[in-house]
Length: 311
Image 1 (cartoon, rainbow, N blue to C red):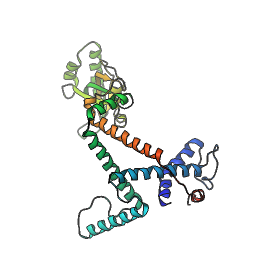
Image 2: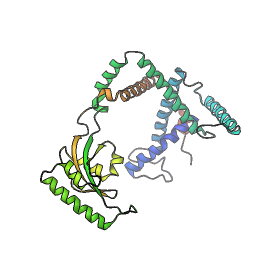
Image 3: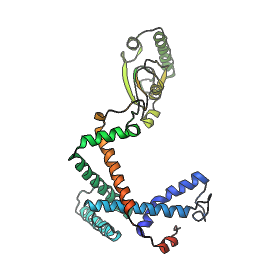
Image 4: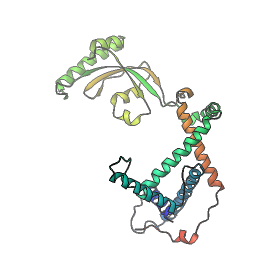
């Protein structure tokens, strides 16, 4: 029951989000036992918690089979938690270095324990893979899953020339900005007349030279903060941009190389480590799936039916 309770806590936010997003339901009095389109939050929570607890126990059994965990019962877990916290308290009293919190609670220690156990299991699987015909297995996995996993994220390479409009105090100066804009409009006009970008950069750019930048188009969060990156993402090879403002400077860009997202595949040789990790992750999940399919689950129906969300 304590393990089921923990699983329910892990699943609760997901169930709340589901009913909020689908039905606009809020967690008010009577929420858990109300019906929304024939779906009852309590019923869904109990089922997802059971599935979660069941899967977690399978993961523990796999770790125990590989000697990555000892006692996988709840009382054994509490004993290990008590021993670990006692060890940490003694280390602190002796002014020794410890990593992580001074004392674990049940949830954080369980997560810490399972993370380490899963890592140990996968490390053993990786060692076993490397001791056999690794290359053939991995290349076959790469070919089978490259459409799904290894399409190129896309990239853009651009040449830039820039003119700053910041003053000596690194503040934007309207007069300088007007001058910079005029300067780059002249450069833009010459580019349209067929002048070489490198030569224009030599004449008009603050640095007196062209600069080359590369952008990974998969870095959405980083690129969203950069107007230059966003412009580069929209350009085609050979195309020249209009004036772009970023961080106190005005830019002109020329795209020299563009790989559209999903238009090609990353080379196996360049991403072998990632392929290896993906293979192990898939094998680990398959191991769980097989044990889930083979396991026999006995539910105490009386306790299961009586269980409810605590206020």
